[in-house]
Amino acid sequence: MNLLSVSHINSGYGKNDVLHDVSFNVGEGEIVSLIGPNGAGKSTALKTVFGFLENRKGRIVFSGKDITEYRPHQMPKLGICFVHQGRQVFRNMTVEENLLLGAFTDKKSEKNIETVYRMFPVLKEKRKQIASTLSGGQQQQLAIGRALMLKPKLLLLDEPSLGLDPKTVKLVFDKIKKINKTGTTILLVEQNARMALDVSNRAYVFETGKIKLAGTGKSLLKNKNVQRLYLGG
Ligand SMILES: Nc1ncnc2c1ncn2[C@@H]1O[C@H](COP(=O)(O)OP(=O)(O)OP(=O)(O)O)[C@@H](O)[C@H]1O
Ligand SMILES: [Mg+2]
Image (cartoon, rainbow, N blue to C red; front, side, top):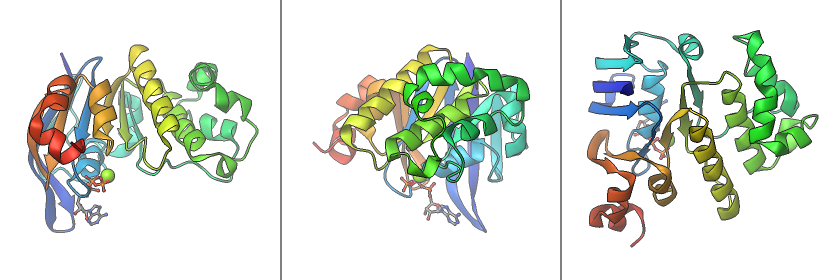
């Protein structure tokens, strides 16, 4: 069953549409990736799903409910959380304060901090440390951990591997698989197409605001055009 279904959406900034007639869906329990070059509209697609941008045409349905007109503040309650590109953390707060803020819309969720610490032991170890003093990889784990405080049904992840060294990229992708195994559906945007396709059930290739190609992660890894354009070979 589709958890998220995005049909024929157009959206953008100011008067200009960036996305043109974009449709994709995410099945319950899947990892689905959106890949494609810089400026193709991948982040715009996530921002539109989350209600930061007005969807000018088309429909977004989550868990059978039409959420086309929903705004960002309504998303956590539905079970959708968003980790933005550039791993935004509250830089002057401690790790623990950052995590607790993840539960501010639902105080009862504060108890989930132990589950988040089990997923990211480094955050427990550094729980009293100021977020700005964490390494890039630790900050990314914190940003994801904060989103997990609400135990989302659907996690939107925008470029979690950006700017991280290969070993940390691998760690982040391992965590993505693990989070998915605990029952969280994931919609992932990634520049690192190889890693993304490798962990994804399915993926969509964006180009200048349109979907050019779709398929299973495995089939896209073998696709000659995808290999030439996005996999460096
Ligand atoms: N706040 C904004 N105001 C105006 N135009 C924007 C804004 N954000 C993005 N755009 C434009 O929308 C287009 C798509 O951008 P988007 O950020 O969705 O691309 P992307 O696929 O996520 O790229 P990247 O891989 O570089 O993150 C680009 O042409 C970009 O310049
Ligand atoms: Mg982006």
